[in-house]
Length: 98
Image (cartoon, rainbow, N blue to C red; front, top):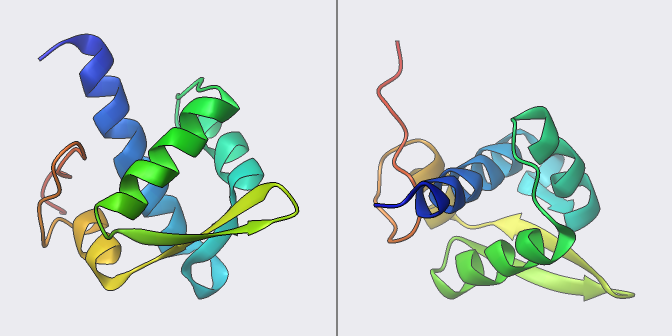
């Protein structure tokens, strides 16, 4: 697996983890973009949007367009993937806790 693919998979996992911390498991792409930088991911807004749409296709979250800004809300499948209880293609599996 290439470094680029590893970064994409990790970024998607971080997005799901960030949603687990958000009130109502929901936040917008601008907040996610800024928060990803705190986790060491220097992604473009287009990459974040692409990741959100990919995660939506996988059933990990739903999105709603609010005046041109995507608002993402985690699904149970996404919460399970963030915690390592399920595997999603294209999303890094987290390591064991503890």
